[in-house]
Length: 112
DNA sequence: TTTCTCACA
DNA sequence: TGTGAGTA
Image (tube, rainbow, N blue to C red; front, top):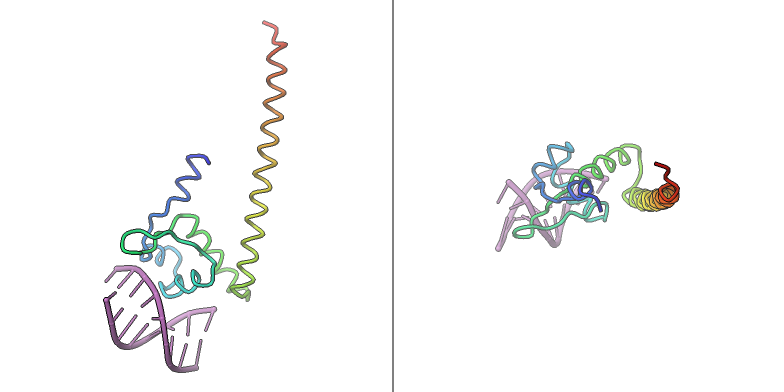
């Protein structure tokens, strides 16, 4: 995992901040968590700590609910997105490996 | 300020 | 799907 991803996944935001960021009520945020749409970490005293990714996720949830999707539908959508992201990550890694191979070959024939 | 749960639309 | 109240 890159340092950039680490920061994105750093769960530090208290619910009050997330509430303002997403324009949702804290009640709604907990409601979505109950239905498995988000998984915030817990910090001191069992208080939720949200990451930037969670905020992003919440904004997505809001859009989908507005579009008339149920929490169950949205959960499935997220799972599909996660699979897709993992897939493209894999192909990206494969591409990097093959490129590295190519560069290694070129390096062996490097004419100086 | 935040947590949780229950009852209620 | 979402809220209000009561609690710790």
